[in-house]
Amino acid sequence: MEEQKNEEIVQETVQETTATESNVETTNERPTFITVLCILTFIWSGFAILGSLLGILGMGALMSMFGGGAAGGTMYMVVLLLITAVSLYGAIQMWGLKKQGFTIYAAANGIGLIIPYIFGFPFVFSSFLVGLLITGGFIVMYYLNVKHMS
Image (cartoon, rainbow, N blue to C red):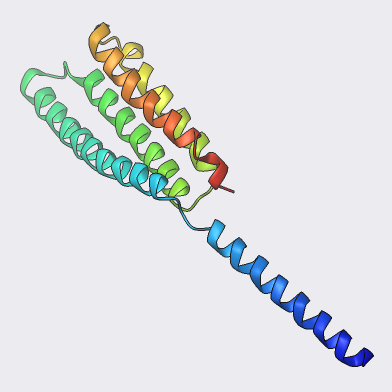
């Protein structure tokens, strides 16, 4: 009788462990909202990388035509390319539900907001505001989902 009782306890424990393990597995699934944010980031990053590469090539063509006046523009495009690559890396990390991806993404995009002013491009409040709203919005939306990352 005692053996049967011990066997029932073992079976209950195994069932509880299995149920707990299945709950842990479901929490490791990427939430749909993070998936949507990452896909939008991947698309935007693709366009930004393509634009930066075309800008680098275009600045090179301008330099050869006008004798080197576009060197600062080329460096600006290279820096934008690097920042976009770092931002994309952060999004890839968040796709894999890694918290450090959020820090990388937020830092790269924060720096990306101030880079035009560091390179001396004129301050245009409306474009800065739009960039701040979009970038800030994505950072906030990712931040609200950091709880799903490890």
